[in-house]
Length: 212
Image (cartoon, rainbow, N blue to C red; front, top):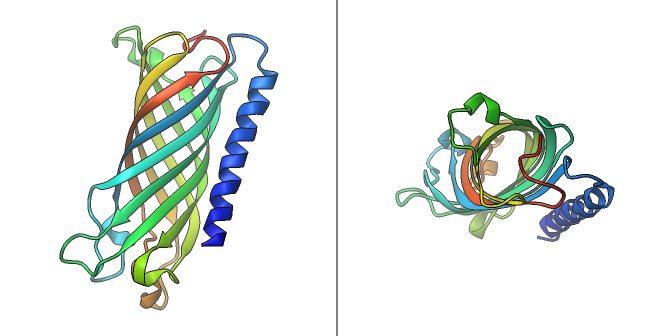
């Protein structure tokens, strides 16, 4: 419990510090620093559960928080954190778990590739490595696990103003976890891949959102 609290506190402090640092160093409108927040659903791969355990195909909520910095018109980076709650289907042993991840990703502004979209729509691809943390709840709290991951996704933004957009993000997280050994270590836990779909807002802290 304390271990997971320290993880969340560290991630929050890191994101907050990054926002302050980037905002302090932003000197012109062409270096767009963005803070993003999204809420949506997650879908775990069933191969990530041990036999007899099965998670819901659609789980709510999935919460995503991130800081993004476009250091070139087409290229940037972002640090983001995701929290997802996953629970069992009706005919599975009862369980719930918290799935969290932290990823550092490269960001590519692919808007020009989709030039047939209306001018207010922007498309951003993102991918990069990270780390996943799984915290089972209820009867299986001893079966914590963590592992490296790599993820990729795409965001579709609609510009409300120069500094604000709403977006939809579709991302897939691939985990690099070992099999549970013994299998009882996997009761109520998860070591697989995850699909997330979130809807949120992106606020530019420096300059316009679609600066060239």
